[in-house]
Image 1 (tube, rainbow over the protein chains, first blue to last red):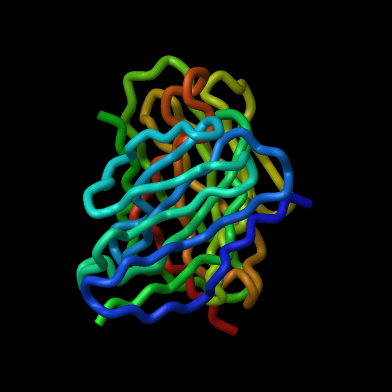
Image 2: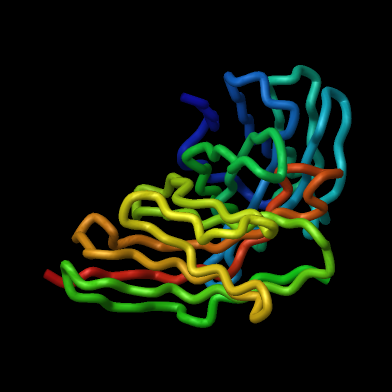
Length: 112
Length: 117
């Protein structure tokens, strides 16, 4: 079974802090994704990566950056956290458009 | 632009009855995939079923079936014989740029299903 592990289940940070959300997958998937989930909005794509050191912006990249130094690890960075970034963050990995994404359990981030 | 729409924010169904969750989509891509995910209160996203745009038959997986009507651009999820454990949020999703950027999904707003005993 594919396992996608997010380092924190719950996180509370202060406005202005730099925040790192870590994600590791164990199935050698090329593709990794960061989504943000908000009530009534579904999941929205923040950034994705199809290879090591490669990244592309999704639909809502503002205020975020990512890092992929190793194939199995994809990090989401909030350079200066703001209260409007309080949300559930979901990491996923996958292979092709025909196969489902595999998701981590999510990190619920609160910025105060 | 590609878009997924789920118009039912919440639904109730009696245990053991069937329920249909609606999903419509919009895309100009000739090839695409449609997915349904379940998200229980614990938060994990569970893949349920997949339908390719060129698949001739509707997909089925156990109690789940996908009612795919390509001309209407709809991909409704049908759950037969509902169980209490089916209470969850359900998301419809579509893969974008099917061959070039595999795996990138756009999601609908979700439908919260509550199964009554």
